[in-house]
Length: 472
Image 1 (cartoon, helix red, strand yellow):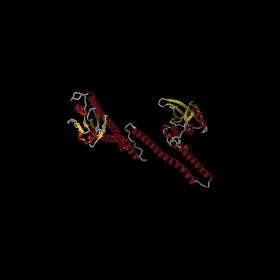
Image 2 (image 1 turned 135 degrees about the vertical axis):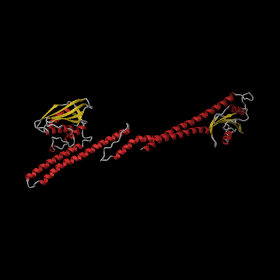
Image 3 (image 1 turned 180 degrees about the vertical axis):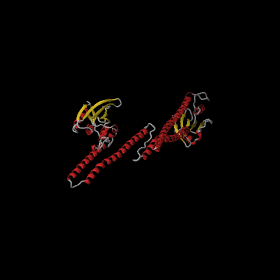
Image 4 (image 1 turned 120 degrees about the vertical axis):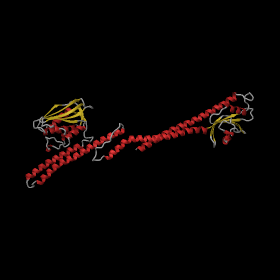
């Protein structure tokens, strides 16, 4: 990944340097040509002024011969850098630039030959031309100024020319330096990018190494988080995923151990009774039958409870809908009153409508009511209630509670009873699967709430299901 990112970074940098260089070069090349053309146009204007307003130094009168005007214009003009001049007529070169001028147009035979074509009588043009000439030696940008008078024996051609190749060579040298500098910059970008990207990707390598070392026997490893960026968020998310997986593995092992233990007992009981049963004794057969059916019923309840818990982590475990809490409280009381002969009553009801899965909440509340019946005597009070309570920490809470006047729960057993297959010290294995309160916990958790209990030995217990009302 680092190599691909560095290559992409280098390609993008190279593209940026190349595009900016090419655009700048094209603009500068156009600017050079415009500057040359402006200089040539200025020279043409000098000659025009000299021809219309100047006087011949030899006669003191206006110019009447083209050769004299060419000579005078060339002596008064000082060529710019890479510029020179030359005078011609139909017979050939008439005047050359001063010897100190480095650019010698007369030394380029191909250029002279091309210029002579413009001064021949049959091709002589009366308009000034600015155009480009190319030879094997160089490329020139030249201004061709035709000079002629009415009484002149032969017209002349004054040429101001700039070595376009030399002017561009300077520009090319500048951009060659730019290109070399760009290559150096790209190399530095590649080096620094590789180092910096390597540091940024270091957490990913640690993440990969951690993932490679994790197995079902070792889920304790975590990716160290040392920064605050997207990769750190990924590492935290990965660690949270490992926490969930570890919890799931632990729960799965515990479930397998507990289920194995719970199923082994009824199977052993049924098998033992069947082996010892006297098939000829009708009373013995009936007794074994009742014992076997009772154990099978308990296994069926265990399987049903396990299936409920298996669905607890599914997104469709609860289906929320607006629920009238007052009506729900009274409906659950009505259903619970058939569980046993107790003094059933409602102490209070919350007069609100809140989003709940009424079926799941009813299942959880009836499970608490069933426990109240199991651990209380006939005629004991069992009181239902629902209320809205303001918590300074959690804000407004909806509380659904049930109080029984039963035997109570010891302080040491309070945490244990909510665990899977957890039982208090006052329970016996014949009283249930040990999953009831765990199912209640999962139902309430799926609603974003929690279950709590307050109990005093000999005076009963109060179980409370609390749900936040912040979004109500």
